[in-house]
Length: 214
Image: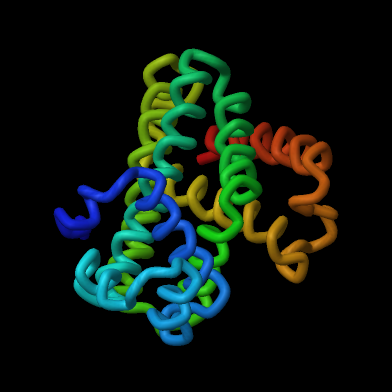
């Protein structure tokens, strides 16, 4: 959802401050717990201005989430483009690490995502999470298709199934670093980039080899 022309016409630094504080509010308290009163107090602006900018709390959250997806898309696009033409295992390693880099850079956005996964107190939850999955598929599919075209993967490989597997592994790899209880003994942590890099390299090699099976 686009913000109103009123919001789009305020200075860019003020726009970023409003959206940044909104991300913080939703990350800390979820959607139902987020307060437009508290947010307006943080920003030092009238609550009425927030409604003029976004129409409702739902409208504000929609703008925050769409902006988060746009930021993640930039990370993914850069990773895809910078590894184009390289071996599949190397590309998959970069895929695994780019998710971690994004979370380290934008912890508030990832906190919102985790809250959405865990509960249903967000408007249009399925629609928003579907956007994340669709973005991942758009990014991952060309990597598989290019590997098939180069002969690195068999022509008979079902690209849709391969992308399904990659998306699931990418999501779990990042979650295991952000939530220790999801780790099964790999010692993954956002605070240990080197261990994450080593694990990503081994996992990428396993995935690239596994796609030849069957």
